[in-house]
Image (cartoon, rainbow, N blue to C red; front, side):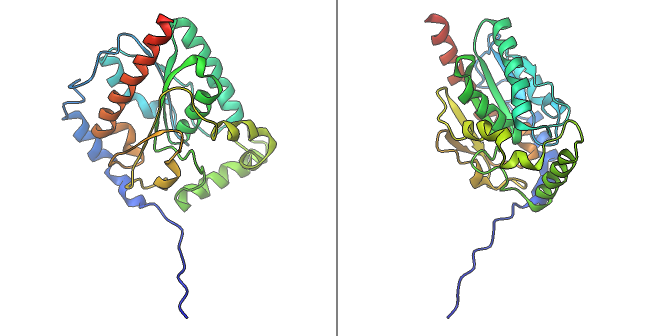
Length: 253
């Protein structure tokens, strides 16, 4: 008797080579020039980069947001490889300061691992957050990623376990130090929460992005291209519009 064997899904990493094409298409698009984008009116947005990436990876997105009237803040991350609990503690302090400075709750946009941080912060501090948008973030299962990237996770974890500063430890994945963070990644979110995912993501298994507490929106993009994709920017404009409505309501109250 034949027995069907279900092989694990391996994302098509070759698609990540299309990120440059996505960036070129973005710069030619109407959405880049602000078509259909409601004015940001100075609303604050905190940008959080993905695994191994730093703030520079979201420079194009920040430029577009500012051109449309939003006020952006970087996460202060050079390379996103730190312990989740420690990284989120610093991000929470940054979020508090930004909200106090602007006098209103802040929208969070996080790519990949940065999206899991954004989701956790929104669950932890809904009083400071107007809405959250995740870009290809594996919030349901953080390790459902391409084996090549999984090997990099293992290497960083080994270095962190060997006391190399600024890197997460293997114990962070299942240990007590990040238990609260993991709980926050499953807790309901009280503010508008949009999760963008792509079946053509070459790094993250798209099914790990299907957070049951989020409004799920499928886009066609590579993983690296999520921050450089015209379709993603159009969905971001819609999601930020919903966050703006929440901010208006909070200020009126």
